Length: 183
Image 1: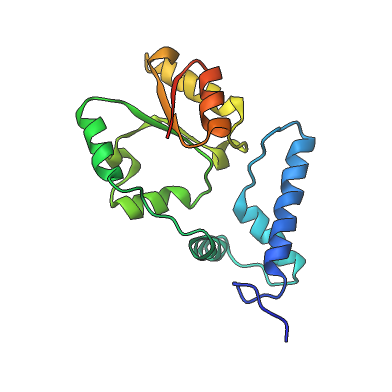
Image 2: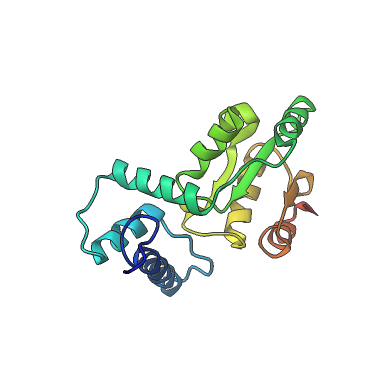
């Protein structure tokens, strides 16, 4: 008996990985060094490769979200809510550069019980890889944050960028002129 992948389709995980690699390779051929896939398009292509009927956009989003929560469960760091509140109360303007997909924002908001606005993330200082088609450590993402901060009157040296990955966060943020910290 063949083992079924988590979504009930034999070979689905393999086809999903191959489809992601194909999408990334296409973006690299277009000159994008750190491509970010649009996961809804990847899923549509993977399902088509498996000969499955094409679900609606809403059904694909539901499938993707359920799958992601199953294979990559996330949870806020201890004391994250209090830390964000303390930063807001101290008058800090918060931004974010995130390797993300469409579901990242609702997952974060659901886990924290507040919108990104409510958590203190300035609407003009949010850079999400799925919206830009590039992922960290792309210098373009950090340049975009630098430009958006400048539009708000915030100089690069006034930005403190805290990241959990030296290569994907700290080094490109430092190259953008930000002060940095490794978490």
